[in-house]
Amino acid sequence: MRRRRTAAVAAMAAGFMALTAGCGLTGEDEILPKATREPLPPLTASAVSDEISGLARAGGLPDGDTSPAGLPKGGWRDCMAPWTGRAPAADAAGAFEATVTRLREHDWEIISSHTGHDSHSGHDVTYRTLAKRGWKLYARRYDDASAPGPGADVSLTAVEDGCEPPAKVRAGYEDPA
Image 1 (cartoon, rainbow, N blue to C red):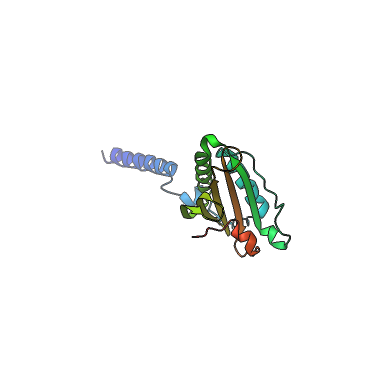
Image 2 (image 1 turned 90 degrees about the horizontal axis):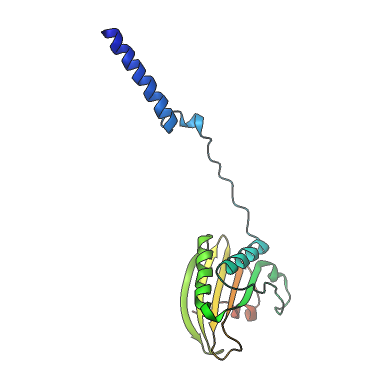
């Protein structure tokens, strides 16, 4: 009788060890490799520009202009990623918000959000400022019923922390609040 009980206990122990090893409860260090922490590569202006363009299209905005044409010359252009376009009238607000949602899904965090009226231009403006890994993204939707053509002007301007564009350029994207 003692032999049967010893054999049964041994069989149960062997079964338990096999079961727990398969579940990761024992020998985990031998089964799973240790995680390594490699730093993420820095975000370049080109990578940020590509991400903004792709997420804007995915949000329902048309292809936009990513060139710095019309901006003053200077080395500061290398630390900016501009995007401008005209949202379709049918759902300009929805396409803008869908783009912001997609940006948030890709690790851009909202740091400010509000709407207001720009007395200089006469536009109603929706502001969203987001941040990600050393960059700030100034998202703006300018609604102006007097503008030619249906829709709303949208600008998505990413600026790397420490970038020093001229005051005239900053005034075009910064949140006045």
